[in-house]
Length: 110
Image (cartoon, rainbow, N blue to C red; front, top):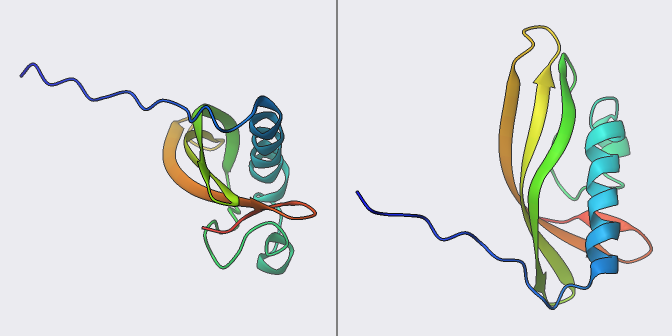
């Protein structure tokens, strides 16, 4: 088949400062918080159970090609996230579509 999927493009309405700030927030949540946080602690950064705590041998590795879109007062991000399984040494890639909102701090709201 000659089908080639369309590569998503970032929304030019999302400024570089917002992209950098949101990326740092996501890396902080995934790198430092999601592994050790309780549901109560994670609730400060995540509404509901959009992302659940990950206890165990799987650890955050990196964000892959995050694409940001403006969504009203929110920022939408489509991103693949690499995790490493410390026990099996396998790499796991999970895809997320997240809705971020910023008041005094960033929060994953959807």
